[in-house]
Length: 196
Image 1 (cartoon, rainbow, N blue to C red):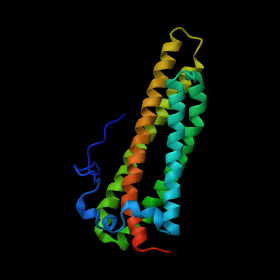
Image 2 (cartoon, rainbow, N blue to C red; image 1 turned 30 degrees about the vertical axis):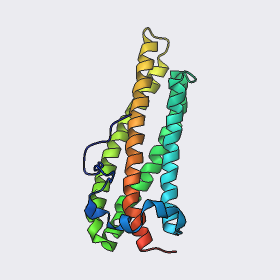
Image 3 (tube, one colour; image 1 turned 90 degrees about the vertical axis):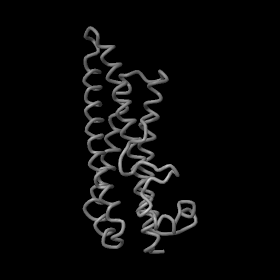
Image 4 (tube, rainbow, N blue to C red; image 1 turned 135 degrees about the vertical axis):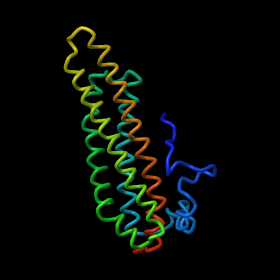
């Protein structure tokens, strides 16, 4: 597992991930109350995030199958590609509309959270770097899989598979952490200005 990253969203000693000045709405609308509440916009937001979490869980399951020896590196190269590409497409679509539309509207609705939305946009850029690394690792894995007849190919393929697994795990760990951070700002804001 990758350690929690240092930076603006890393947790404080009480487990809070945001500075206290950005948690005033979360304190009014704590996570424990979310399942009891009804809001079409919150339900939509959380459904999109749940899909991204499921995509990450699918990538983790494939990695577990490989580690347990139930998938060979060649199978990993075939099975992983559509799963990773599906996650990336969904993630990019969601982040793009947030950066272009939603976060601007949220800043206008609640200017005291502007710094938090700026940090989330910054994290989107950082996650794009993780995506690039995951795609490069997938490319290396697939290239190694194409050259299995060459001398030393098995070792190269195993290294490429291990690298792919580690990089996609890092991407998903950071993405899942980012989704939680984002929910802690967005969901209370949506409840505060609820459409229910």
